[in-house]
Amino acid sequence: MSIREEFEAVDWYDQRVDATNDADLAAVLAHTGTRRGTRGHDLEWLRRNDSVLSQHMRTYLFTTEPVTEVEAEAEEAASGDGPSPAHDGPGGSGSLGIGSLKGVD
Image (cartoon, rainbow, N blue to C red; front, side, top):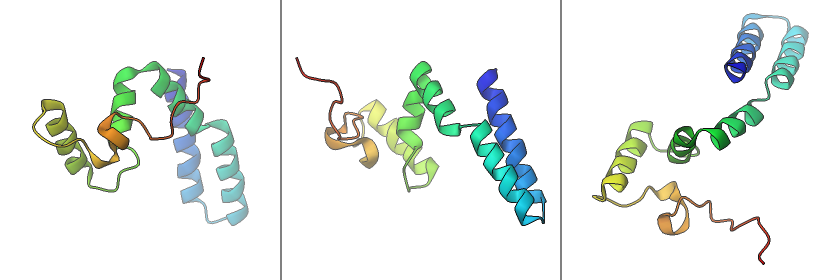
C-alpha cells in the first residue's frame, strides 16, 4: 500500500507540473515530486520482492519492439516453440551479460 501511495504522489506532482503555466512552479513541483517518490527505489524494491513482477520487468522493460510482439516472443519462448527474446542477454539465460557482482570463493 505504501509503494502504491508513493506512485500516486509522484503522479499527482506530474499532473501539477503539466497543468501549470508557471515555469518556476513547474520546476519546484518536478523537483519535489521526484525526490518524494523515488520511482527507481520503489520499482527495485518491488522487483526484489515480487517474483512475478520481476519476470514481467525482465520481459518487457528496455525493449524497442511493440509490447504485443515482445509478449508473443516471450510466450513462444516459454512454450519452447520459438527463440528466446533478443533482449534476454547472452545465452538466453535472463542475464544482462555483466557477470556476477559477488566475490568468487
